[in-house]
Image (cartoon, rainbow over all chains, first blue to last red; front, side):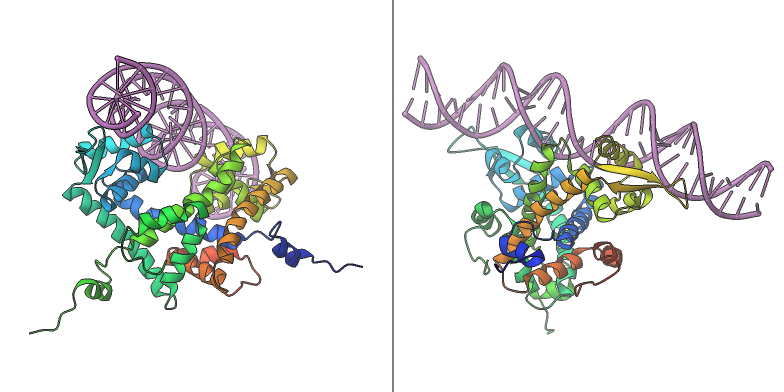
Length: 173
Length: 173
DNA sequence: GAAACATGTCAACAGCACTGACTTAAATTC
DNA sequence: GAATTTAAGTCAGTGCTGTTGACATGTTTC
């Protein structure tokens, strides 16, 4: 008679029908909801939504970004982008300049106003991370970074790395 | 002349305008996007959306839930719930039974079909967690659980705990 | 000069959230 | 027992964010 693995052990060995990790699934859901909720409240006072936030964030983080590069990061269609981008341009949170080398391209830059709002939003969300990490052991920040990175599609991880830590000093990714 | 803290050190001491944690902010954004993307693809084949997923998930996890309890977990309005719930009821993924003690209440239960879909979705998402955790040191699972819990509004953490680990054996939360 | 490319625009639609107003039936309170 | 509160359902309208598809404009490349 063969020795068989069964139940949880068999499942873990096969990686097939292991017990669902309900705890992680639900915690990520609730954590993300609170995380975006912070920004939502501030955005509301500007009559902006999450889409505006994302555009403003990545334009602030990567000034001079082209439309195509932004679309690639956000993974949305140009029609989706155009609505929110137009509002950000009209209300002077972002400005666009034609490319020098290629005049078809439009390079996006945050204005002073835009940079400030982007920073305010980032501070809000950073405060949540700070509070969380302060309640955890030393090293939790690195652990969190590694965990979140590992949750991203492996085929995208390199791209995300170069986006999150452009060029220089990557703090032990 | 006084000794002053400045730059990063001053910021961290005050917890005020510390450098924004762009890395964590962006990693959480990308990680969550991939995380929900897994389920989205499967849901699409049923013509369901994320709202259906959430309802089906919590009904499966807490069979017998009332409408009011579900609304409280999801933090949406009854009008929002009604549309997706109706579809889940019509297509026999969920069934509702009037309360015995209080006949105004409707208790929600997953059908066999509903339980299976909920489980398939949970497995998909668990596989992502598995893959991530396998690439990390032993203990990463507990670290992740603690990190995600700490990211939730402190005033909600107890409620989330009792939702995620009902009654019995809470694995060192 | 033709083809490919970057961007913009118009139109229609879907999903999922919201507010506000009103209904029904059952339970609770006085 | 009548009045009130409660649980749930419904109707109508709206906002934000995403989608597809088709087409226009100017620019660069071959």
